[in-house]
Amino acid sequence: MDDPAVEETMPIQLRVNGITHTIEAPPRRLLSDALRHDLGLTGTHVGCEHGVCGACTVLVDGAPMRSCLMFAVSASHHELTTVEGLACRDGRLSPVQQAFKECHGLQCGFCTPGFLTTISAGIRDNPDPDRQEARDMVAGNLCRCTGYQNIVASVLRAAEIQREEDGR
Image 1: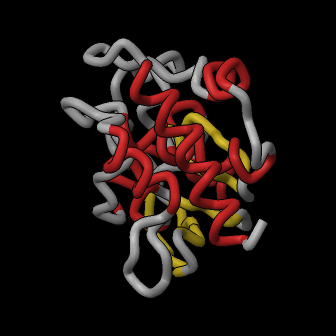
Image 2: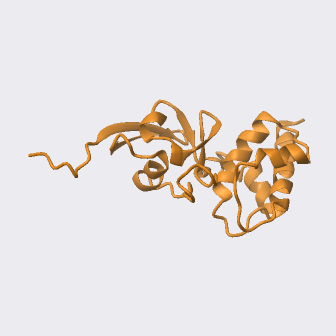
Image 3: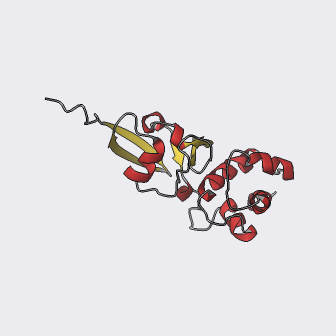
């Protein structure tokens, strides 16, 4: 007899940071849980589990998405980028990571992965933000430690680094 407490699983294929993985998981497994528990990518943090704080933000086909609001099965056939996938292929920090380091854009670091992924997409879409646009870019991510001044400075510096790398 089937045990009703045992949840049925299914194979779910996820392409994360350029690598395709197949996991066996329940259809209602959250993407954040699949990344952290099934794939061991613990850089994606879970703060509120309601999509409010932004700590779990990953890029889905390049767009910021709260991974605690998406089922892993829904992410199948999409390109996912986590904070672990932001560094340059040669091992250098991405412009956003470099800017956070230079501008002291983090304190405890819990919210940082969500900021890094959000800002990476933001400066791709707006390569020359002004201070207000930088604030708007991070408005959906919560930080309990900083006053956001260094985070906004990091956005502006990341855009500058990216423009330098692009030869603009």
